[in-house]
Image 1 (cartoon, rainbow, N blue to C red):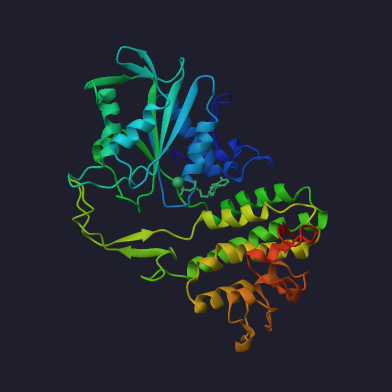
Image 2 (image 1 turned 60 degrees about the horizontal axis):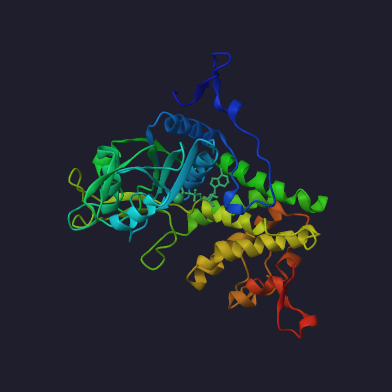
Length: 411
Ligand SMILES: Nc1ncnc2c1ncn2[C@@H]1O[C@H](COP(=O)(O)OP(=O)(O)O)[C@@H](O)[C@H]1O
Ligand SMILES: [Mg+2]
């Protein structure tokens, strides 16, 4: 309830966050990784985050992989007033130790006087620690980079290792993200206590649709009008296929990369904290996430209007992207077949001889009914959509002007 509304400074009234959601403008020249579509959830979290930053409170986003934590934090930091603020991103990983972190966090600093260091000019610096719980836990049950970072919070600096003096760091603060189902799961409570911790959840189906539909719609806006009309259908089809895959392909020892809800049995010798020893099995909730949808969308956004002049070519591109994003992660022929079946959405019995032996020799599928594709792309001839072999080279041909040495892009 507290987070459902914001107080409008002008009217003094409580207003729902929908009032504050910004408009998304697609910019084709922007790198795909920098595209961010505002939603109610992101507007709320960005507002809170910016308030914390301006009031010098540390804030941490905690959530499962692919829920958009990094994207959200990056977008908020990018939107800070560049005249007064600077930010530095530190991607933490399992191999990072304190000396490695010290080199990285000292880069944006300059010497002010004596042992005082700070960001250039009168700017304030925000360090963004991404995946903060990733560094390995050493034999002392500590994560050395986090202990180094903690020295700044508790003692306003860290040590110069040659002169053995405390370097005083000014005008800096931390923001962080972490996934509680990865790395060491949690960080030392001595560091954690300094952060306001906010949960980032997987957006709702409508939220996800709104994000990716707006991106695809923006990209297809300068395509042929017939092609442009397909933006909603492509998004719906991707989301439905994504949820089908997420509910069907469960992980096992062999297929550990099929991520979904699993029980984890931690080893208390390696995963322990002085305050909390994890011995009981617990549920890891790492689902097939926004990244797959983002990858499909990114593939669609690489399409150029001059090559994709008919809806059929766009549908084929969509099939290709789904094959690359989902299909290529399948490890058994049975799974590949099941996925192909799923994509086609066959409801009636499929003739067993209709599936190819190798996925790279895909010929027209001879199935009795195509429901899934038919549901979203009913105008298209389903056989035609499947005609082209689906592989990386499906969009390449040898350039005849170049004696066939180089491949050229070919829709
Ligand atoms: N609001 C959004 N607008 C556009 N893309 C988004 C949005 N939220 C998440 N994404 C995309 O979803 C994918 C996963 O997000 P990411 O920030 O990497 O998740 P996390 O850090 O939680 O693992 C990224 O490719 C990101 O670009
Ligand atoms: Mg991340």
